[in-house]
Length: 346
Image 1 (cartoon, rainbow, N blue to C red):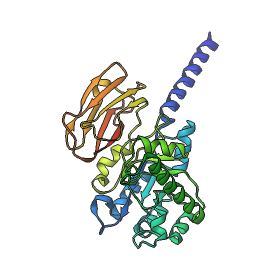
Image 2 (image 1 turned 180 degrees about the vertical axis):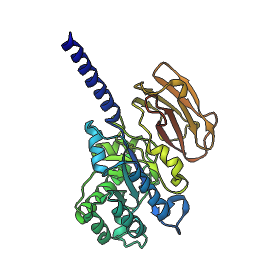
Image 3 (image 1 turned 90 degrees about the horizontal axis):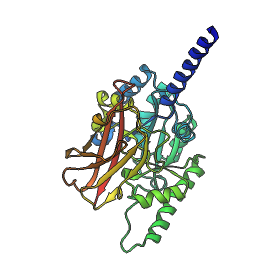
Image 4 (image 1 turned 180 degrees about the horizontal axis):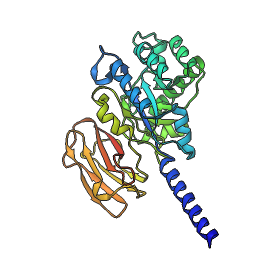
């Protein structure tokens, strides 16, 4: 009888451990920065003082800050990641990343990724780092990755350009940029940060065909169910640099999404519609809410116990917009599940 009781206790202990591991196994957050500067446009900038506060919070609250390649590999392979895992990224490779950001990151011992535009570097544009500075940072552990040749809107066709011509041009852009990074830095991580965070179905299909991971600028955490042609990142500059709101995002979780159904991220359908089928678990349907940029609360229609249809109550403004959807975690009070759907309304 004693053996049976001990076995049951051991079984329950193992079961609880496995459940805990499954909850924490596949989630992480990627942060996105541009400028670390007090003199450049505030909308894409964060001061050195504020940036230091961000990193101090990560350090003081025992966040697991890892390199982007480690995060992506772990998520893809379903490996266990500690709670509060974060990767830090920068877009465009501005000089202030070298002058301001890098020394602060080095002080904290945190790895980071810089997405660069090789043609702008080769043309000697004065506002971006040259290959010499990028090599120096790479030598200290920074990861250098692809942000396309010169930061064009990838999904936009040229006048009278066919689908085949567009595809060939964008393929050349991505592969040329990747080759230049490999030649100059030695890195060959097939990660593509979409300029302006914009992508459509055809661009995602091309990125997948080329074997790249596509990375956006829409909010959300990532897990093993993520679409690797549209990984989200939390912007942490400008309006989004406020630490009190950033803390909520740093502690967010990724919904387990089975299917995501919409016409296209770049669309003339206005208002657009979105349908999500979840692997339900750690949140209540009644607490799931979505908000529309510059509009307010979205209209939700639960088709069944696992699928919700999301609509905007009115047309969206032309250009970039989002549906941001959240729900509080049941098992982790104070932590929210977070998903963002980006739109470009034509």
